[in-house]
Length: 109
Image 1 (cartoon, one colour):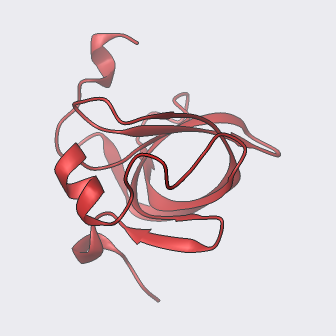
Image 2 (cartoon, rainbow, N blue to C red):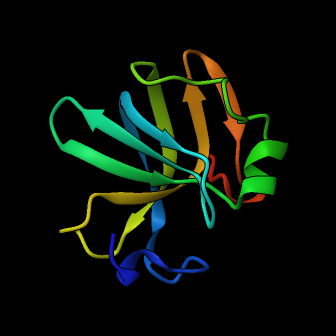
């Protein structure tokens, strides 16, 4: 990964939220942000960034609750650069269990 991934805040992401469904290929709980690499059926591999480790863990998403191969649905804001398959997740659902990473940012209809 290059320095381009060292974004802080939300300025790099679109305002509208999308839902991304796929299968977890890799999980990293490393700083600065835990990430999931998610293989989608039609759009290849996406990088899903979560909050900082403490906030991610407060949502209940801690090491061991998900594993490679688990189905995941991520709700979040995708990168402004559509060449990047990257999103900042506000909520993830793994194997039916919901983790609200940024509850105050979840957009509802």
